[in-house]
Length: 218
Image 1 (cartoon, rainbow, N blue to C red):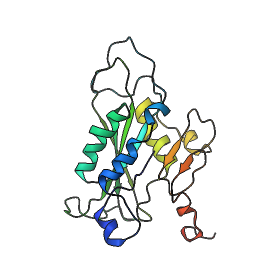
Image 2: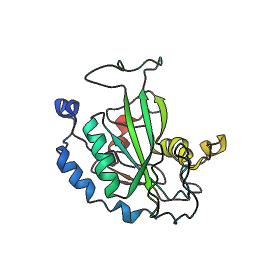
Image 3: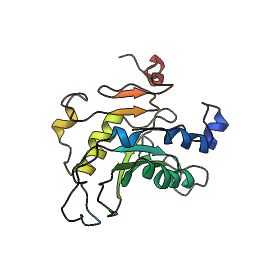
Image 4: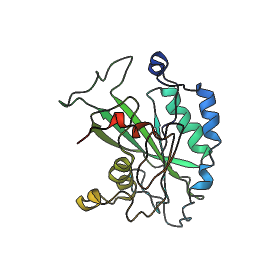
C-alpha cells in the first residue's frame, strides 16, 4: 500500500509539505522492485476467466496505490508503473468524502476540487495470461479527518480490497479480530504517516499521526 507524495496544487499553495515534481516522483517509484517482492502466481492451464469476473484466480498479493484526481498521474500509474511492476489493474476503490450529515464535502462537478480519491489495485500478471479482465469498482464513504490522511489501512485491505479480490466476504467476526492475528500475508505501507499493528511502515513521516495532538484523552 502506498500514498506517494504526488505534486498537488493545493499542497503547493498551503506549503504543508514538500512534494517532488511529477517526473521525479515516477523515477523514484520505478526504482521499487515490486515485481521481485510479490510472489508470482502459479501458471494456470485453465481457460481464462470471463472478462467481468472477480475474484482473482490464485491470489498472491496485490499493490494498492493512492492517486490524485489528476488524469495524467492516474494514466501514468496504469500505463507506466503497473506494467513496470508486472501488475494487472483489477480494482479501483473510490473513497468518497462526506460531512457528518452525509453530504459531499464539495460538489461533484467542482472544477478545482473533487469529493473523492482513488485507490488503484493491481495484482501480479500470470506469465501465460494475455487476457484483460474488466476492472471492478468499489466505493467507500466516510468523513475525512486530517489533510491527506486516508481511511485506515487495515479497513481498506480487510474489508474492501481483499474481499473484492478473493470473493470472500468479510464477516462480523473478522471485523472484530485483532489486526495482526492470523495474518496469511505480509503487509507493507510505503510513504506511511502512521503506524498500524501488523504492518511494516516506511516513510519520512511514519510517526506523524502518532503525535498526541491527534488523540483525545478519555
